[in-house]
Length: 437
Image: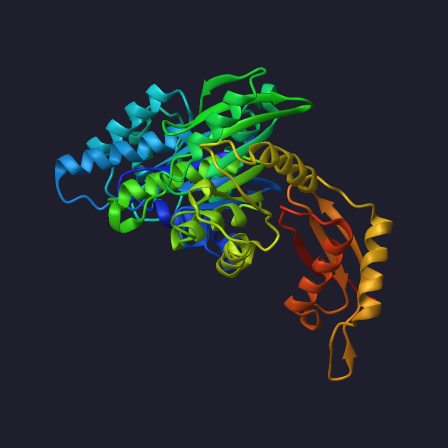
């Protein structure tokens, strides 16, 4: 299940600073693909060997008091929708404000797990006022300095403790969780409705975790699915920046819950920058991915149309070269059965584990065909490889010198693995570690 932590608070209390301190190292090593790192509002984090997702609800810059309260309310509602644990951050220098008290009332009504943190505690006099914050009703406050990394370790210890107490959704553990993502009006809801409408077995519509998402369950044959119909992301020029921010958070939270993402592209419009950005979110999150070109029934075709469209997608979405492409019509139901089969296949690949002996045979053969580079008489060497996890498949390659193992060579080893096992529809993570000879 998703483990999501949101930072909530009024403007200028240090939310983004705390967010960057917690996830900064992860962001620094993330490749620059279209996705979460550009917005810096959503990122993976880790503490004490346990992973979770951080959401930063900062960025509100109110100009009027009415707009101010509207935006603050929207921030807290989004956090309440998605978070398992909420860090309520207040400013120790300016002290309690009416806005802090208003936010605390909303958080109490939510019933969510809330941890109170008082920022800028290294400023003179702040520690003397710490008892004032008991008025907010969240128990002992954590006195921290996000800027100077004071008290953050203790805060994260509490975050992990509370996350571990979150109950898993056992009823859905055996289902393939599929998020349908894409721009507005691309056909996400129509696709889900057609799938559950023509394959009636045990189908139950249940409220999703957001106001903009409906979860649908479908059992077909031996497969069980949980379809997540996400809110679409509009182009920024067509929507208020803050509303866009919340739409992004909702979509990303849905992606985070999923095993497989089906990214829908409108065949009548072609692939756009916004499509690339949305698909980049799923890629950055390490999810299994299928690209579905919808409204294919509306396209006039000849014997080159499909090939041209596939070529355009591969050129625009080079970072997800592993994703299969399928041409569908939610309106007519064209190839939707094939889409379900494709979901089954990529989910199987997403969970595929290769035996260590077989994996090293593949790596050794690849090295025999193409040696790593050498530099100043020192030859790069690959000692062995091990698959350390699935969802997505993750491999550790042990080498003598990381500097001699270029990124292109790691891609070569990845391709060797794919040539033997396919892994269609799933990203592969390759980690290089040095080992003494």
